[in-house]
Length: 250
Ligand code: OAD
Image (cartoon, rainbow, N blue to C red; front, side, top):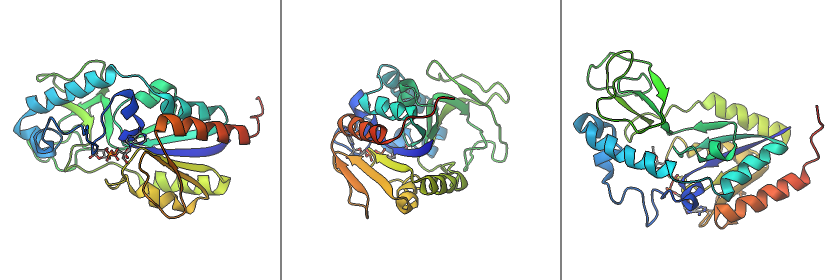
C-alpha cells in the first residue's frame, strides 16, 4: 500500500464547529492567550486554565467529524494513511482514522503537572513524573496525579512549552512517501507555528503534494486546492482512490 501523510490544522475542524486560532472567530478572542494557554499561566491560576480547557473539552465533545475527516478516513481503504495534526480534538479518530499523531497534544488526555514532557518545569523544579491517562470527563481542580499527588492538567502543549516532535519519525515518512511515490496533503493550517510548520518544507521533496485551504499560501510547487476542507478533501480523496488499483485481498 502506498502511504499518504496528512498534516492538518484548525481549518480541518472548523466546519465541525471548532473555531480556528487566527480567524475572525479566533478561539482566543474570548480568552486572552496569556491568561489560559501559556506555561506561566498554569502556575499562576490553574483553576482558570482548567475552566478554559473544560470549555474546549465540552465544545469538542459536542462536535462531530465533518466530510473532510471522513474523506481522510476513507483513503485508508487503499492507502496507509498517517495523520500529523496540530489539532487537539479527536475528530479524526472518531471519523475512523487509525494513525493520528497529535503534535500539540490531545484534549481527551491528561498528564501530571510535573510530567517529563513539560520542558520548562516549575513548582518542584527537578522532580518529574510520567503519569498520563485518557479522560472521559474534563479535568477538575483537585484531580490529583495517582503517582505523585501533583495536579492533573490537559495533555496539551501550552505556549512557551517545547513541542515533542520526532524529526526521525517525520524524515522516515518523507523517505517512505518519496520512495513509494506517495502523497502529502496539508490541510487547514496557516503554517505559522513551528516546529509543526516544518512538515511543509520537509515534504516539499515529494512529488505529489497538495495544500487545501480556503485561502492557501503559495508554497513552491505544491498543488493548491482553494476551498473548504469539507468540499476539497472528498474530491481529492475520490480522485486518489479512483486512480489507485484495487488492494489485493489477503
Ligand atoms: P490557524 O487559525 O492559524 O489557521 C487556520 C487555517 O485554516 C488558515 O490557513 C485558514 O485559512 C484555514 N481555514 C479556515 N477555515 C477553513 C476551512 N473551512 N477549510 C479549509 N481551510 C480553512 O490554525 P492552525 O494553523 O491550526 O498551537 O494553528 C496552528 C497552531 O497555532 C495551533 O495548533 C495552536 C496555535 O497557536 C498550540 O496550541 C500550541
